[in-house]
Image 1 (cartoon, rainbow, N blue to C red):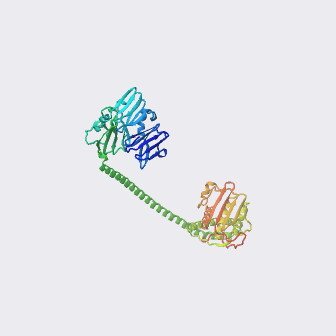
Image 2 (tube, one colour):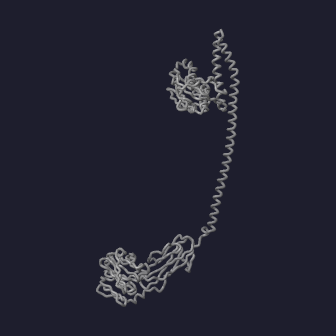
Image 3 (cartoon, rainbow, N blue to C red):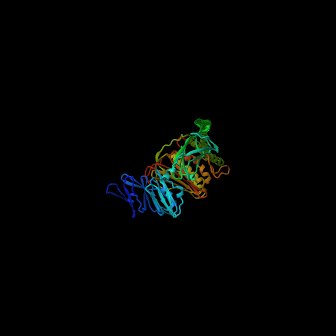
Length: 567
């Protein structure tokens, strides 16, 4: 197959392509490495491109910087395949003097023309349905000869000129919601209407096979596919400026001139920039109004909360003042009661030694009641001073275990009267610690005294030990135990497990409250474990007080039992 420069293309049966350059003994070979298919069956020239035909495909070959570029021509395959079933079934293929590519099948003939990257079917109508095609040839004058069904058909080269398009494509009508719109170079269509654009292209024959493709510039991204539909519908187009463009091609593949028409869709008042500005102002106004209302509500709530906070501060200040008055009253009253009580106790002790038995009996009752009253007065005074923060500790070096044994010895008569065993363990061990002996004795007296008071049978065991530098004291009894519901209030002021005339034991409910405050003042902790009917264990831990190892001897500080410094 010769090209325009005088060179020749040769297809090999084994699968390859050779090019013989004009005027030189140079042959260039191309194979699969350059993309040339292996099963070549036919080559043809169309325009400036070489067409390669294989068993099932068509390829276009173009020169590329001294080499070749082979591309599968999908469009040509789509046009040819329906004619011959597959390309390999074709009788023959050839190109004529006007660049048409002819493909002859068993029952059909097709003529293809290439326009850019596209192919068009330009087969004359008489040649479209020929029975039993046996051969097709083109002579030097460009005439096409087809042998089919025992007949010979001739298509003269001049016949091609008869299919040239003389009239361009025409946009024949524009309708909006079915209503016609006057045609002009540019038309205006109200917003929100459904548009239909109808168009037509002139053709000498086979007008029903004329194809069109369209594009609404400003809306469509690309041109549509070729179609025989003669209208295009658009709905819900946004406001704007558009150009509708339509192209046509006849059944013979001859392109018709393009037609275009301008479309203007004006924005309705509610979509204009002024309307959008109004919307923005309205939204900002609503947001501002909501923010103002929310801010005002917030201010009112803040004012209300501030009023409530001021009222709470006033009430708290009043409560603190009343509480201070109560503490001051308790302290003053306790001081005022201690002086006459001391005199009463002194006189009672004198009357206990009277010769008259009745006087002695009455004096003992008075002395017992006086001691109970003095204990209550001292407790009231002590809790008032602790609450007011006027209690000052005076730590000294002492033997905590010895202090525990002394307290146990003092309370031994109370345990003995109830038949209880009272012991301090480990026996004879010294625990040197630096602490306030009076506060420590007060803690032990309250805990051991309570254990004896609420234990009917069994024993009370006191343990004093040093763990590192921490002093640990526990008081365990086998008494009635404490109701779990009462445990959260156990260390509160004036709280007792049983109250009223039927209460199980006497007391003022201040012993454990004083104990907890003293432990807190010493920087320690106190906790309790109790089981009803089994017994109770109090544990006190005072950190950083142990001075020497267990077993060392330390002096026992002088103290006044059951009194606290500043009482």
